[in-house]
Amino acid sequence: MKYKKDGNGSAETSVKSYKVLRIGDAGFEGHSNKQFAHGRFVVNTRGIGLMSPRFSSIRPVSMLNPLFTKKLFYLESIFRPILNQSTKLGTMMNELVPEDFFKQVILIPGIEEQNKIGNLFLDIDKFITLHQCKLEN
Image (cartoon, rainbow, N blue to C red; front, top):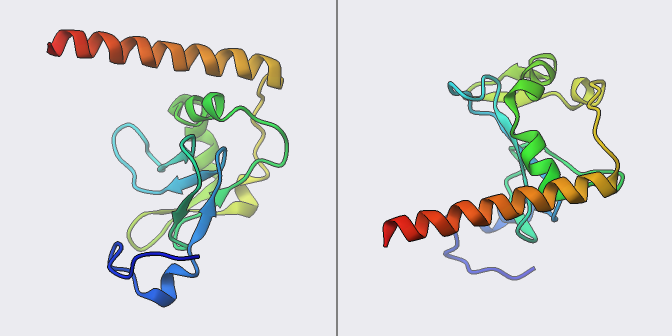
């Protein structure tokens, strides 16, 4: 892997240990706030990226629609009880405990329905962005 030495200020040796996130992978961001009491997952829908090994990430073992899971993982009403059971307070933020997280059950629809829901959310996001641009102009 090649990268610019000035990059983000990380030492050359540490960049080699960074995690590669593919589309559909989710990184756990453990900062709590009013909206996310225990932190939250952020699903990668953009492309291959790098993430510090300091953070936890998960990768689906079966076919999931990233546009669907991106919205699903953002729902605090679903994920608050799950993360309440599977995070611990770290030195600066909450940390995911994978062994506890993978004991949790999340019911999701089949891939066909995920695709329809994911595309609907994508269309709604595009529609909102279009109208926000119109309002700004």
